[in-house]
Length: 380
Image (cartoon, rainbow, N blue to C red; front, top):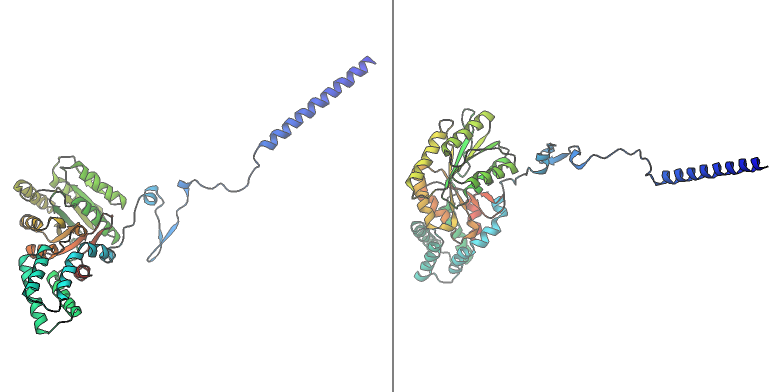
């Protein structure tokens, strides 16, 4: 009897232990997440490239992280001045308002014409150009018998457009010959926004689908090369640079050499800002141009002038023009001054056109200059 009871107790214990183990296993299985048969989604940096839609249809986007994450698409140059016209009109409002206020009077006596002259001179139009405009406008109003303010405004616009001269070729000469790249040399004094202008100009060229090389020939200022390289990296343009304090002519030479080897369309060379009164620095600038032309002709020399400097900019233009044969002008900070007449004065001083204007702090705030749009902004 005792043996039988013992067997029953052992059997009961086995059952209880087995059931407890089964219960623990069951609870453990319930705590695991259910299995899934859904495909695993790739990580964000492994997402397959997609097609973007460009103006001519689908455009394949480079699937490398640099192309997707950092490369920017610059705004097309066409229409930039139109987009920025309101900003220009705001800064030049005093000139336009002053002229139109006088022309709107019922009688234009000698005092009124003197007021028009003073307004033009204050806007840095220059003495010769002011005399010419006032004489022509005064004759035109008298001969045509114009007394209506709107007709007077139209006559003023016509005379201003004629002075700004829409017949000048304002296209960027950036096409080389014999399979070599065009070479654009950018010069100017310190503080005009020269390096920024080069970076913005690179964006203009990229927007026009021209392969570009940057040459950081401003070796006196380490930050200039870093700044230029950053501009280039944003749009996928390589920068050739040298050691700080190195020979700027050598950097320019190597940049053009790289452009020829890569089959680039354009090489943009930034130079060190220099005071136009320092003959040694100006002579060195001439050397940079001569050394570059051992590789390929310089097709364009752009002089960057700060529009806020007024008549001092004309002195700079004169000296630079004597050293490197300036072919085009870039006026920066034009939205920061009411002296828009500098456009007329500097063109007359050098006999070369204003080709680009800077109208703000944005990356694409460099616009091709257009005479009609500029005058309309003055008078709007």
